[in-house]
Length: 106
Image (cartoon, rainbow, N blue to C red; front, side):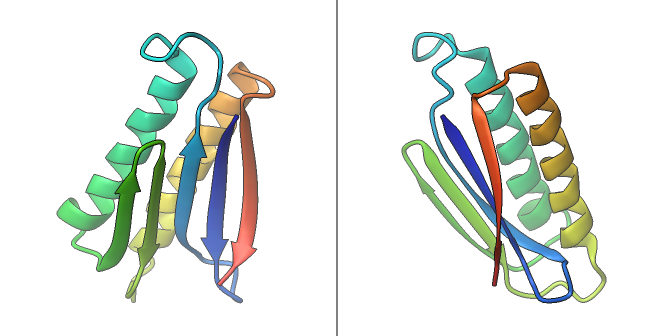
């Protein structure tokens, strides 16, 4: 199962995420659920750091990526992360039982 943990602050703004695991929908390398999640996560991480230039701590390991924004005065990071959350929720609807989404306050 893919676990997507979203970090939010006390004002309910999204500050980051950690996505780990494998969907188990198909063989490794053939799993379209995993490919969908991986693509969405990488697009979001690259957009946050490279396009919007939001300072963030990013950690990438095998089957595990995390991103935590350090500064985001205008709220662009929150909106980008909300886009990822929405997309992962839709993927979860398409592949029931393959993605678990949780929230943690930071």
